[in-house]
Image 1 (tube, rainbow, N blue to C red):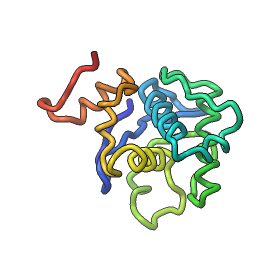
Image 2: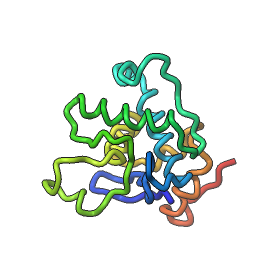
Image 3: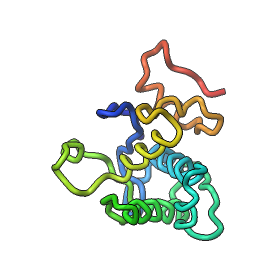
Length: 160
């Protein structure tokens, strides 16, 4: 159920049903979250985030299946973001973004999915568009249809 949407900064991945404890944990949604978490924590500039995540850091298996490692990594991401001054709810969940949460000043609490996208776009891309991630060798095949639904027919592609 994950999808690509446009925001004021470019494109981003969003979850439709929520990921984490007591959420639907649709495989596409979980895959998006696992992939973005791995990109964030594995970036060379994020050694402090890896240390914060705990000893023996290892990338998550991007399989779309929720488990204790994915749940813990979500919570560590939220706690790390809070430790650097962002206002995330540290509940271990990545929820669907509601339109009222993208209105500046409407709430002081940010969505985890927005922060994941924002940081990955900054670290790996030009800061505006998440779509070019599809050209990475580690881009999950499960997300190809998610990206293709957003793109015009001439720009769609198949993962081999």
